[in-house]
Structure formats: structure tokens, C-alpha cells
Amino acid sequence: MKRNKKIVKLAPLKARRFKVTYIFCLTLIFGLFGRLVNLQVFSASDLQKKARLIQFTKTISLRSRRSIVDRNNRLIAYDKPLYKLWAHPKYFNFPGDPTQRLRSIEEVINILSPILNVKEEILLSKFDNKITGIELLDEITENQAKKIKSLHISGLDLVKYSQRYYPQSNLYSNLIGFVNHDNKGSAGLELHLDNQIKVFNKSNLLKKGGDGTPLPDNSGPRDFINDYQSLGLTIDSRLQKASFQALNKHVMKWKAKKGFAIVMNVNNGEILSLASIPSYDPNKYWEYNSEIFKGWYSQDLFEPGSTFKPINLALALEEKVIQKDGLVEDSGKVNVGGWTLSNWDKKGNGYIDYPKVLQVSSNVGMVKIMQNLPPKTYWDWLNKLGISKNIKTDLFESTAGHLKSKDIFVNQSIEPAVASFGKGFSISPLKLAQLHAVLANGGVEVIPHVTLNFKDNLKNKSQEEIFSNEVSRTVLEWMESVVDKGSGIGAKIEGYRIGGKTGTSQKAINGRYTSKKVCSFVATFPINNPRYVVLVVIDEPSKAYAYGSTVAVPVAKEIIESLIVIEKIPPQIEKNRLIVKKP
Image 1 (cartoon, rainbow, N blue to C red):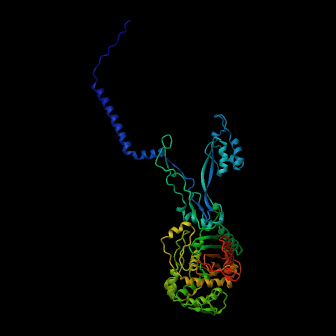
Image 2 (image 1 turned 180 degrees about the vertical axis):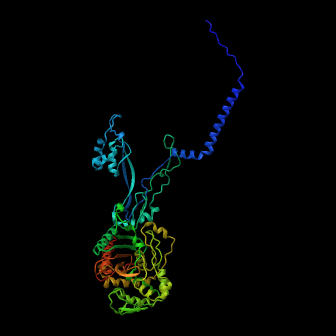
Image 3 (image 1 turned 180 degrees about the horizontal axis):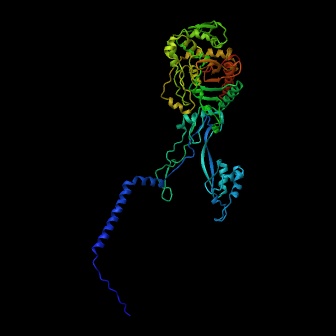
């Protein structure tokens, strides 16, 4: 049977329909072109940013700060890895369970409680009907985290982070400071040397494809490895501990406000120990008043008193206004510009030599000695010593001392008179230690510092010679007599040559001297080949008979005894025979 085929007659396209089709296609083309221009020109920047977010991932270094170690590589501060534990009850499932099975919160808590050492009811209270995103606990140790991971419980997530930790607690607090909860240095070296302690990675971007697969790029094999360098200090932890314990014991004994002790190498300015009381636990800094965080030994000022007398004698010798074997009359009192100045005990000592001036700490003797020095010259020397300048150290921003203007100092005779026994001007304890180090090493300026790399900052800096070697030797011998038979005899150690000077100065409050005292003692050791200066300053001891000789000297002696053992320093005197060691 034949099928009838329908024949369709072709007819020309209607002009109106053709125009509509043409306009539609043209509009589509222009729309696509406009879209292309918008993507390539106007939206290019935004699209590039979105692409980078997809193509690159930023790696976050868990170890964001360098460790701090002492000169023997003992840890002082480091980033401790810890974990936060998050729970998602709607996914709780044990290994071997069917996929659909959901474990109860109680079942999971029952397993976690003994690992975390936290009572079940405490952990259960954290859920509070939530089904996801529950922070159960933080500060979880690596050992605990390892045990939790080994459980392979679905719905538990461990997030690793780092926390600054100070293993030696309050031993270094006033020096090192602390890092706050935002991982920012907030006191001490952690703040002052923040840029040296922070870790800066060479690269922290990883390129990846759309499915997350890492793509090859030009990164080196170590680009994503943390910086494992440490900040090395000149401090010896053994000596630091001995100094801290000795200082703390005597601050408590005398019920003092605060105390400071430093041991410094006189030849290069390296600080071997720096102890300060009161202290605090930097691991729990929030429990303390912020006033305690201050590095007062470089930022607070005090009148050095008699501990400055050896420096003044060196000035007099340099200007040749006194001779090494000269004498001075100490009548017990002296009138200067209408003011009566006297010795600490109100007694005179007659004609005495200069070692005796230091031994009995004669104020009157010092006034008469320094009256030989023109006030203008005297002021110029104090200015040269940097009394009113900051110490460019790596510790804290030190406070510049206070020295009267040259006009007042020169025209008011009382000013150079009181300056002769360490009053009328003020300096920081750190500055006093620096000046005695200069005197001890033969007269060359040194900068106190605590970081081992600080010497790199001094390579191109010429060291200024302040005192001649002959003057330094002379004054050190006079200081030795203070320990042998003067006010510093309490620091004497059989077989060792030690020089020193005590100081007991009144504190001025609102321009008036009070009964409050600052007791100090500075020692140079060993005298025949000076290597160390030891300074002890104790502020406001509240018991009777508080003097530099009774309060500060015993601390210094204990520190020197520890120094002898730690540095294995042999005796300089054996059976009345002096052992002279070449520098």
C-alpha cells in the first residue's frame, strides 16, 4: 500500500520575522560582548581576588615567636603546642559502628573524662542542648591530644595552637616580661625586642587547583618550615637563680619595698645575671598589678650616694687636683654656702688618706677633695659620663638621669659639694653599674646588654676612653681596702681580692629628704684582673640599722661566692702570697 507523502511548499521568510531573528541574534552578540568587556575590564580586579582565594591557601605558623635561651642554651621562654577540643554530637560515631548509628553525648564523655582529667558533669554542662560547634576544653597537652586522636571518634575535632610558656616562672619575669593572650609582647624583652623574637616565614602561600590539589610552583623545599632560631641571652641561669634567691631572702629579711642585683662583665658589658624583686609569674601575668611589670632598674632614678665616691675620686685624679699619696682633713663638718654638711655618723676622722676616705665613707673628706676641682670642669666631667643621657642598651628604654643645669651647678657652691658624695643628681641603677664597669676595665666605655647578638650593633662603634688605666688601677686598689678593712668588710672572701663601696642614701620625696633609704653596694672582682662588677640596690628597708654595709653587702657576698663556683675562679691569694694574673 502506498503511503501518501505530504509536500510542503517553501515560502519566502517574512520580512518582519527575519528582522526579529536578526535583532535577537544581534542583541545576544552585543550582550555577550558587553559581558566579556565587563569581566575583562571592569570586574577583572574582583575576579582576580576571588581566584586567588580559590587557588592559594595561606599557611599559618603555629610557632610564631622564637624561643629565648640563656648563654648555655637553657630554655627561658618558648612556644608550647596546645590543643582545643571541639565536639559535634550530631556526628558522634565510634570505630566499627554502622554509618547510621549515632552515639550519645554521655557515651563520648565517659571516654573523654579520664583522658582530660575533668569530671563528666563539667563536660556535660558545656553541651547545653547544642548539637555542633561546642568547645569542650582548651590547653590540652600533646599527650592528651594523642590519646584522643587514637580513639578515632567521629564528631571530635582537635585544633592545634601555640601558647607562650616560661618554664622558670618568676626567675626572669622582670627581665623577659610576657606575651598576652593575643600573642603580643607586653613587657620586658618580649615587648622591647618584639621584632627580633617574632618569626617571619619566607613564604606562607600554597598554590592549588580547583579541587584543592597542590600545584607545582617556585617555592623552595624549606619555604614552609618554621624559623627555629632562638634569641640567645648572655645570662647564666645558674647565677641568675643564685642571685634571685639571695636578693629575695634579704629583701624579705629587711621588709624592703624592692631590690635589684646585677652581675656584669666589665670588659664587654655582657650581663650574666639580672634579678629584681618583687617579681611575678609571667605564665599568670593577669593575677598581678601592672606596676610590677616595670623594669625599674633602668627606668627609675635614685641618688647613688657613697657608691659614686670612687667615680668622683677618679675625676679628681684625672684632673690631677689630688695626688695618689695625698691626705685630706676630715673635721666631721664643713660649711658650704651657708649649709652645714657632715659625715653619716657626725664624727670627724682627722687627716686621712684617700683609701681611708672610702673606708669610712667620709662625706666631709669628699667635699674638700672635690672643692679642688673647678665647678665648671666638674660639671663637664659629669656630663661626659652621660649622667643625663639614656643608655643605648637592648634592655628597656632607659630613663636619662637628672643633673642640674651647668649654670646652677657652677654658681651655687652647694651643688658640687653634695655631688661629691653622690647627692643632688640621680641616675638609674643600671647606669651606676655601667660607670663602675668603666672604672674597672681601665676606663673604656661599655654598654650593658643581655642579648648575644648585641655585639653586632657595636662593631662599627668606637669605644670612648674615659679614665686612664693608671687612674683606674689606683681607685680599684682604694676600693679593695674598703672590703679588707672598711664598710665593705662583710663581702670579704678568703683568698680573693675584691673591691667595693657601700652606699646609704636618703630618698627625696617632693623635694624634701625623708627617713626612707636606699641601701647599695657595688663590688669589682677580682681586683688584680677585673672581670665582673656586682651591684646590689635595696629600696626602703624598713628595719632599724639599715645601711649599705648591713643590707646590700651580704647579698653581694652570696652572689660573688656563687660566681666563683660557677665560673671556676681560682683564688688570687694563697698563704699570704699574691697571685698576679696577666689580663
